[in-house]
Image: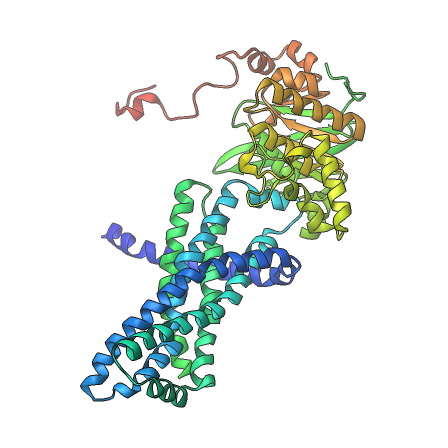
Length: 257
Length: 280
């Protein structure tokens, strides 16, 4: 019985302890951020690495999500005779929900894992210790630029995802299913609010960018210096980020409604 | 025998590094048990000892990467255990550290690796950074490799680049962790020559952790042999070989029997094989 309880609760306690350690790491990271800004070259390099290099996957995914949305919503709306609202519903779904959430999940899979593996290998090959020995704080030089890059790149990637999603939705809805082009755009522009819908999605993007970057950097930073340790840390980044994104999405949606 | 002018100098006379009563426990194992030793200013001092005896750990204590349970580590009169972070970083700017695996930044080429400390700490014009970096690379014979990536370097070349990076601020102290491991005789002699040159021409105090006695005999003025958490012998390399001590006899003679056991500490063999009640 005791073993059963331990088997059930130990992973739970380990998970809670990990959340606590991530919190402590976040405080250290925030304190190191001003010094991190003194390395602008590294920040630009990381924005390129996590942002620009994620563009292709974000654009392709956005296009297909928009196309599928258009097909599914056309079917649903046709039941109620409301296909003229297709543009509005696609735009609201993308701006308010799918854009930030799907982009964040893709960002965790593409950039988050890359950050964890890179930082974990830097730990395993003594590069972080070498920086310490050169009197360079790895929190400022390694962790801060990666965290800030995620914060900057995510809202931009979400904007690109949304744009491609609208393009995909228009392609299917107007070109293929025959919705009137003017109706598609005029209904959308008439019913979508920049502040309430577009900007609230960008707030989510900012929060998800911070969350995924924090988890990715922390997992890499604390990975045991072994092949298995780095591999496990990379897996944990995807799993923890995905759960955290969905949980935070619920909280943010409730607040931003 | 080392040609250094500091040969056979008494390390206690003008110590740059003083370790006093250092006690350290790692994973339940006592690594250092009230360890005392001095490193003389301007000397090349080798730390030798059996594998797993804490030689690299000692370097980490000297640089404040690790802290012991008790004792003092003084570097140039400053207690690294008590130094605040800023003070420790100020001290580390005057210390070069050569990692066993070179620890080059893999995303940067050779030039940028050597320039890294300069860019991080000194706001220098690009021309000056270029001149300093190329001068250091010339000193280690790798000016022509400035644009190669670490993945394109051999082990010996990577170690020389790490050495160029370690001396870019002209430090007072360089710590070499296993600088000769895995090097062919030519590369080993190149690193050996560099250690001696840096010591003799720039007066840099050097501490090297190594197992290769022939190389140590060439490079070092003084050797500390540590085993069982304590300093068990000290002296010039030639003197230690001749010393009448079971530790030096076993270590330098490579004997299987002696104070350093072949077996890692373990419970009696009979117990592991399940003979309950039997004695080993």
